[in-house]
Amino acid sequence: MFLEYALLQQRFQLASDCNTQTNFDSFYDYMFGLLNQFYSEREITVTSTDPHYVTPAVKAMLRRNNRLMRAGRADEAGALAVRIRTVITRSSTRWMRDVNTNTTLISRPTAIIEHPGLNIPSLAKSVS
Image 1 (cartoon, one colour):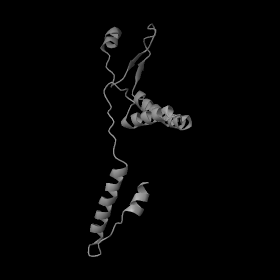
Image 2 (cartoon, one colour):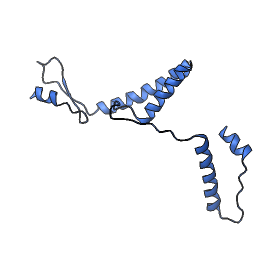
Image 3 (cartoon, helix red, strand yellow):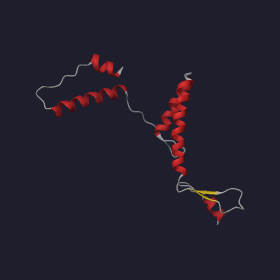
Image 4 (tube, helix red, strand yellow):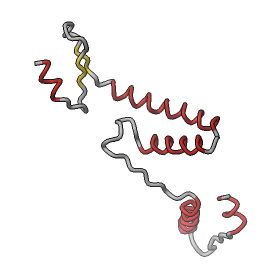
């Protein structure tokens, strides 16, 4: 649709009296305007209450997955779910790389997990 409109509906003329850079700049502005007309930017809000692995890209994929499922396109939604799972797994792996598990406290039923981005004062007091 985008290319159809660009090629069939609109005629772009290059000025023969201008240099190459000026012609390129005007062509770029024209194409950029068409891209904005057909594929406008979307605004996605990521709040502090979202989990650490939720990025704007993940949130957009989750919304698309939800739309596909509601439309009954389960095959496409399943393929997208695999991509979402891969992105979240990579993000969680990167986040957990900095985790220090304190396993010296054998008498405790669970190990204490410390992470630079996670601040839980009640756990820190119980260990001391």
